[in-house]
Image 1 (tube, rainbow, N blue to C red):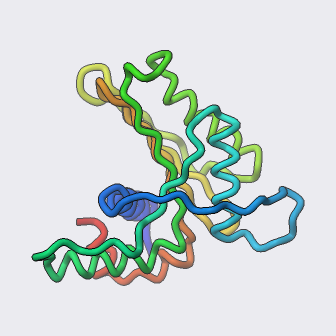
Image 2 (tube, one colour):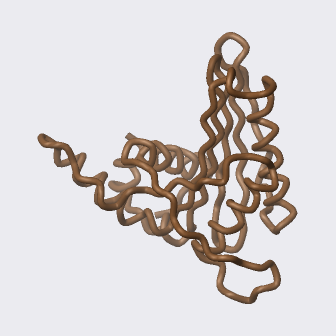
Length: 192
């Protein structure tokens, strides 16, 4: 199945939502060097995202989809299909989330500045922005920001939303070959 940039963003947003619903863990991350000729797979993306978070002064904890999460009693067939699809896609996904109450931040833009620093670090390590970033007002004084980067077969979607009293940044990197194999039915399941 071919996907448009808009469809990819929707899929990534749905997958990030599934990660928040199913739970998070903290995987062990290997050490990687920029000059290493090793293939650029999930461990490389994890290492780069963790290093970028550290360089930006943001929390370094990566989120991981919980493949072993038990479904609640009374789960529907759709719930079971979504859980199976999420489990199948989890090895091709790396995500990072920074949820902060505005009162926990030292300044009103700290969370966004951390995301900007994280993205700058990734750009300095070969991640290339695809298209223009978008920023739009939300509610009373809130903002919603999105941008997409690519590197060696991976697509990284970053978003930041500030709506009082919360600032949330989310970065989800997905392996292109994994998501390009989604059927229309699977894409629809993730979207909604």
